Length: 631
Image (cartoon, rainbow, N blue to C red):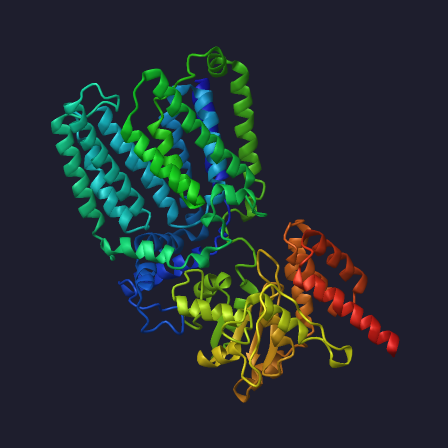
């Protein structure tokens, strides 16, 4: 009875822990795509959400438009029925089921030992509790491994294998993670076959217990059927090539994104989830130790388990996004490796009444803590990635224009503005050429080959009044701009017929000022009509937009306030990036708040003495003082 109460408290704490407002950058486009597919009864053949996407059909576009279709439709229908609450409950159920199933697999280790491991798994998963189709892959990977292992334990019954083909059919229509499932299937089929023949030739080989001939044939038939079933999706197995090319041909797109870092890289990342990182390393170390000690004790090694653990370990150590898949395989595969079970420490651990009190109190505390912000749990989180106020402004004042926007805001803009507006880009990065052009516009490149740091330095220098003199910007990348030519970023705006710019002033994570913001400050072709601390909106200064300009025109000096509002929260977190401090210093300096600016300059230079904006601010202040003394 006591154990059932603790398990009930554990499950309750799990469900509450994985609740939480919708905050993922990508979720809004998943929702809108699901709506499009459901309403049109077809997967889009062209990107309907970008104004330049019609007629562009690349492998990446086909892949991105179709790989999640079933999950997206489920998201949409659930959202129409239950709103954000339905989406959030689904996320919690999937993650809770994942952890609970892993605990169930481990329960023979002892109640408290298994709960302790389950807690580590939960902490390791916290950065992944996003409203994305990827969580289906986490659960399906666990189910796949469990089915294979159930068959290996009871090879006289092929019932577990019957579920694998339909599982792969479902998986391949919900998320590209089914590729992981195919690799696991291939490993099981290959290694078990090799094991069978190797043991027939040399029975004494210490490579694990082989299956019987009949069991091998059944296994191979099930694996072949699963592969066939997995091909029944919009991409077929051509999706394999698209997955690989989409994530290898454009690696630069994912630079600085946590889920594409290795666990070692994350440890040095300012926004790292250290608790999750440490939990992963403990679980990884535990897996390695258990396999090693079990091998020594039994003087035999199951090469099937070794092959799968090696594959998933390599994936997880390369890229963080595969950590949940590693956990989904490593934990079930080593469930019988109970090397320490009989030791006095673990006997006391699993029988101590004190442990029941500790775990009960902990789960109660976790539940209460998880509900502390209960009023906002079942909603969209108010954050800069979801520019709700700007969306309201755009809907109330419909502006017929092609829009330039950042990728981080694009998903939410699609969700709220389509079909009234179409975006330039979003976090799908669906058209690489447009993404590259978007970077060039954002960085206000004077020329196609101009490096980003020089583009920033050039934009800063352009703000120095003529009577002050000049500030020479020295960067690691020196470049000569051709004179008397229209800046490249302006040519790109013309190429796409962009008359509306909806963009943040600074980078979300680093706080770096975007050169585009600085260029627009002094550009009479563009008029500021809106800002709110999350985004700023500029419209082209033409007769077509005369009415909206007359109604909403704002002084461009307010851009400095926008920079302050965007960077101040980053500074409050005491980030180790220098850019938020220098960007804030720049805005304060331009508003004439020199004393406050100098504090931020010093803070930036302490972190990075080569910070371009901070050094510019020092030079600008010196020139301004010199100009004052002359006058």
